[in-house]
Image (cartoon, rainbow, N blue to C red; front, side, top):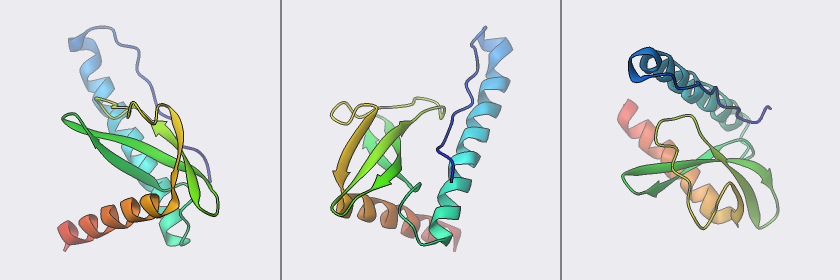
Length: 115
């Protein structure tokens, strides 16, 4: 399973770059969702992602390693504001129970709103 890699758009001007940037943002989200769905279907925590609320949005981190009691997460960007949690930075280890709860909560919310 590949690590999420953002499509980055070089900003020229609002008029020139808005549609291109929006298309890249949608492609990035589709890529992350595809990777997440494939991992979910295999019943794996590895390569899933967690969202952490921050400021007026949330930060997105992909799980890149699973250990017995923790997971390693990596910041994902290319979704707009691209918030990064200051105490996590670009990469961090978090408790595995926290990651599992975060992923399960996101799955339950998605199921609720798709019903």
